[in-house]
Image (spheres, rainbow, N blue to C red):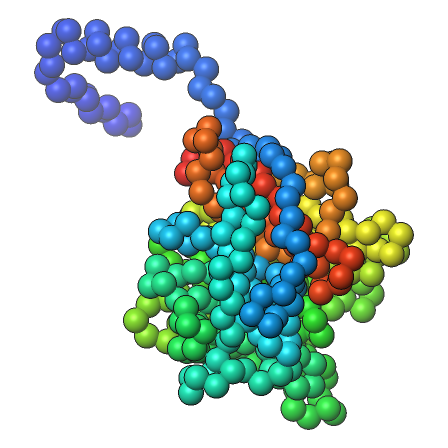
Length: 379
């Protein structure tokens, strides 16, 4: 028996409605929609242009040797910068006045502030190796320390502009060394701890990264694979909360390189887009520096993994794309470690400032590179 097919009645609309509707379908069918590549959706359409290189001459200021500037942050309201010095004997930051190109005046040091504990006592020698710095909307400074081998563990802390510590962030236990030497090694490697620190524009998210892999994350079979870790904290009125961790895969180091690491992160927006700075050093070729764009989109949360699997098997790291190899600029690069967005340039673009750590060597000055950056705020 054949079942009868029920009749489907279209709702009654004026004839003009159907003419317009079919016209729309015909128009869409005849259009070729632009193809959006996954790479385009993942990254911002950034364009970067090198402007000039300048320097901060070696000098003394208030009985301190100016140098070791490993991180920098811009105070837009007051139009000056705070730069952290990685001097382990006298941990401190400087207030700098930098003029964007064309600069009528050279870089100027305005003030030095020593880091102090909650009782306003200067931090004791060899208890901090500060590397990262960011200014909060509350006008405090977030500072990261790599730690000092066998003397002090790494830390992330908040300080007032007077240098007095306000609070210290809680770290997962696997970022510090095992108290029992009989246990497997763990924690940050010596002088390769919390090198990078950045705050998103709204100030509620902090991102801190190790320079290279933790001891327990090293791949014994392939030393060329090194994954740094990025910690993602939520800030607010209470103790900051670690909400995620991500793996950051470093580019393989060239041959005969003595150092290879992630030395800076810079948050560009509140949507998980960053710039990252990777630096290498060899005795024969000097410093190599590459600037990448980074996206957290789709990256795996590794906060439950004390040990990363060899080769990051099954782990999706953050995505990155090369923005600029600074080795193509035609200048001799120094130990560039700090990066921040500066004031708007005369052409309306954003300025990007990258600053170097002269390692307190008398024959080297503090290098400052200026760039213009476009494409921010677009996706």
